[in-house]
Figure 1 (spheres, one colour):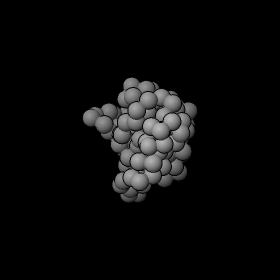
Figure 2 (cartoon, helix red, strand yellow; figure 1 turned 30 degrees about the horizontal axis):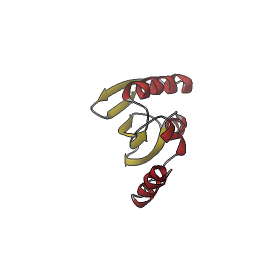
Figure 3 (cartoon, helix red, strand yellow; figure 1 turned 90 degrees about the vertical axis):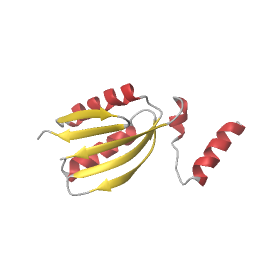
Length: 112
């Protein structure tokens, strides 16, 4: 119990809000999720779905332009699980994209 309080206190001190469900899966990993070539309404739909993925902890926009947005994304999912979830998310939204993963970055490029 003290460990959980310490972790949550540290997160608040660091200015991060943590979703309690993220701690159910394990340690948190940081990724960059870049959306390239999507219309703004599709980027918002993707962002909403990223927040609903299992293991989600927090995210923030680090770069944004007319057709490009980059998120700093924190989750307890591993890279393989997140990759599967991103592909399922795109399929559910009816969006066509190429998904590339390198280092800690997922780049989703619209193919429309």
